[in-house]
Image (tube, rainbow, N blue to C red):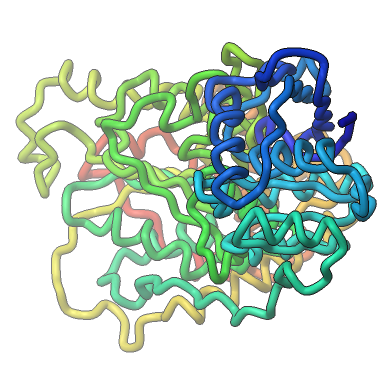
Length: 520
């Protein structure tokens, strides 16, 4: 009887911390205790592990067993430690003829009959273990495709606890190796050619896709706001390999990955209902917070339909994440950070009664103000494109051959390639990611293009943050027009996209001409 050590991983947000599990047998009456700040699920593991061991035909030591998880000050929870605990006890009970395990991590939940069950968060756990120098992992066979996404790590899968123990004793063919899987089929996305008319809305969608900008559609019911928004994924480029791992890691924690093709290569589209809670939107839970809708939409789109029906506190919680690209959540067991670099698309009616024609509105001025003030000034200041969507007046096609999503996507990819090349030394991929100081210092628009921005700042029509965002939109317009730098017309268009009068339905206001015709 003696002491042994094996490795597992604790998950804190999207980061993992290697956990050393020590097992000591002997020195008292038969009992099993786990030390090192276990939560209730982990504290129950001693009963699961003992039953799984005995039902697998193995002996459980009839002595005092102490299982210590280090670092001891780190709160630990979940059932992913079961396999490591069982292995530690068996090796401590009989250490003879065991292969070296100092470079091996064990992750998995045990059923009472010894089967290995999948757990959430395998990908971020193994990524953290690899960064710590661990080069081999044993996981449940059902999550082997997910584990195989980690580069430079040998991953093995098992169905039973006995298979793992035979491998530890020297058998070579008891565990399973990952196999090549077919590429994940792209999800079906509605085509942009289905939208009747709404040329300015389509153009705004293209600009938003090319630069990664936040977008607000305002218009009557049935005008095509949601229809446009749901076609945005069809014109976005696929994720880069690094971005795909980031997104897959978040969805691994949530538990929403496919077992056959776990890697997410297309931007996710998340559309929470307007009755959602703050915790569901940003993340929450007991102990350590879990990801919310904003983190699920990381590197993708968060679509808030009927945004003025959301409670004000739900919308205000978006502000920091929109600026910083992450959410920080403090709970009982600590503070976690989840990525939330998503593109927010919002759609709303102009008032509660929402008639087709503005002159038919029956709402009082107070009702209209109360409805629209849920979109606060600080929130709207973070929305680069604010577009008025008029009602459809004819179902006849407005174009001889409507542009398909593939055609628009080609222009978007070309514009993003130009932006990526421009910001390549800093690692930014879209204009929306570029900090304001870098815009003004390294790639400022020409002085004549800045005159309108200075005038808007002087009159109070624009904040300093809004000015930075106008410059970003102007760079996106220049990229779409294949121009080397923004010109005054691009700044004018960017200012038009931020015009707060969009929130006020005024039929007499002239319609802005199709922007693509003016700017390339």
